[in-house]
Length: 464
Image (cartoon, rainbow, N blue to C red; front, side):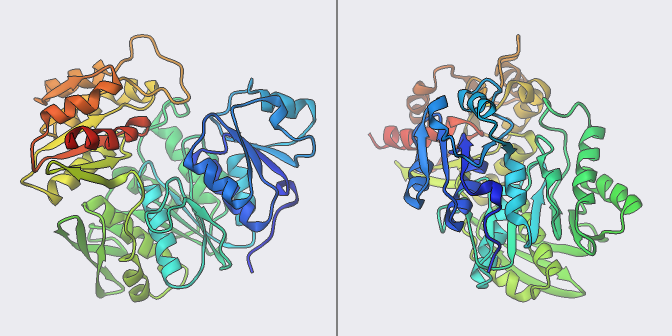
């Protein structure tokens, strides 16, 4: 039987309850029996799903939404200090709890696996959740995206394992005390919170230092930032380190990745033995994510051959190379990629999966700060497509930065020889793409903002 509800979480109120991270915690608490309430800016399927579980969800933010008897108010780093519900919480002396602290409290007493890295966290966490469920271990999990199978980003399980996506963006992953930590890669991102790679390394070192005694750090052997972190952790900590990747020195060595259309066959060498299994998503980077999940499960004592077979049951996460549909001979696929490394990996994966197809990309930059620092690299990544449409920057939580526009990306893309068009009116994109696409083409909507909404609209235009 998993632990119950921490006292502070008996009647929580979530500001921004519809967000990927916040909604997962709210779902788990509701399933454990807490009286959950919260608010979000707009109506959504997530809000409806929470109501179906018994939570109270208000649309819009207002002081009156916060009940006087709330045990705490849960916030993320995106919530501004002038939010009326946060102001009301101060007036009522209701404790304010960061999302990461709420999640950490749910992991208490369980065997936690925390998955970290600049990218790949959602996929790897999802692979573990699916595989452990397939093995009847009934894990709890909290993920930054909805699984294709169960269609949810979080669940309370009766088993002893809790798998969680660990967010480095605001250093909140430092709150967890996992038995196994995974670090997929270490790169400079989240420029509003990190000024340099040294700050990134220090943050990941702190995260690794929170692994419980006799715990395990599973870390990539091929990615330069992860290699540097491995050296730092080994110099400062007695934690067990297990490396994975294509390097000959990797503890779990990726021997071969064989593309099979929209799937891959992966062969690894573990403890001197060859093990082959299927990954039901395309691309070498997703194969490496699966190997990281395999290594983490083995670190918990799960037989490798059982886990490898169960990993083959993973069918994907929404927005991670998710097929949205096909019309007029054109497939439309959605990608959450918004960092240049992610963009390159997904574009290369699609090239490998359908080498004869033309690849058309609709890219929406995410955050002014990220575009300011990485816009040139984003443009270079788009050169892998046959043609691209670039939208205006999706601001999310940020205010505009003078002079920073998506032109930084399109200029870099053209300099790299890319065929790229800027479209400022998002509503015009479906018609633009329908005019460009031909039977046999692949259309990829890409970005962490609301570009995902365009997939169905593009399919409608293609069908008409």
